Length: 363
Image 1: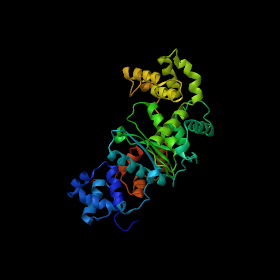
Image 2: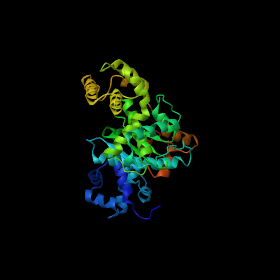
Image 3: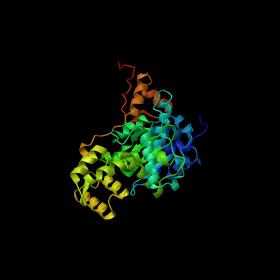
Image 4: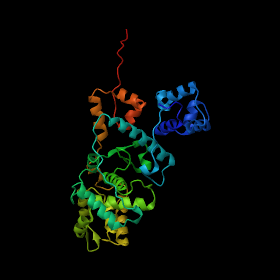
């Protein structure tokens, strides 16, 4: 236990709850400058103010007196939308940090799948597209995926030790995030109504895990490399080259065949077009023609097949929590160990816990 108030924990809790400095200041009856001083260790709360903070965030005092090693920038692979606020990024990272703490608790009680991804040793800045294709092919060989479609990418990732989750309230501002720690986490974007696009986001984050361990990502190079890996992982080039003459005949796309191909491989028609251009199976003009077709038919964001595609639902985190609960460790005990409230635990796990009834009876 830390022997003085830790302002970083206040900041984490504020961001977790999507509160601005002004929001907390208003609740405390203080200025936002004062709250900032609390978060940066330039000031410490009185006992009365500490009680107010505990009441606002529904936590015990111990929460503000704990110390955890902060996540480093090269552990977080973050991809935000162009229109996203910096605040949204901070909220997601705060939630990922708290989820990481929950996972450390879980691993004391449950044997989670071992993380099996081996990151490459090669300097990522010198990797060519062909080398990334080879790395993705080797990844498929390592996990005995062959050249077949990956039926459920979410389940596959959880089987090899990656936890998949989402933070719904701000997912419309965040494309995806992965956290490389003892138990890696991928936060997906559920605001995208396309299962195929969600799958591509997950494959993209796996690409970062393979290609960019210890590398600060988010620049054009690392993002394009993760895209190349994701494309190759989901649709090996040999399979597209073999089938493309069926999809593209006489300089025209067969959209019915494209639809069938999409359903088999779980990759959007837009991504198939991108992959075909990537492999020089079509030129820029042919690619633009395909993109315009999708736009004209209202398929820029959601394609016609998307509503009938089988959803992929993460289960590893909930299964682990259920094992702990079955071992007579209550949700109250879990929250007590983590110095958090039941509502925070529910937000982290996407689960609802029964309210514990009082043993006292009204007379």
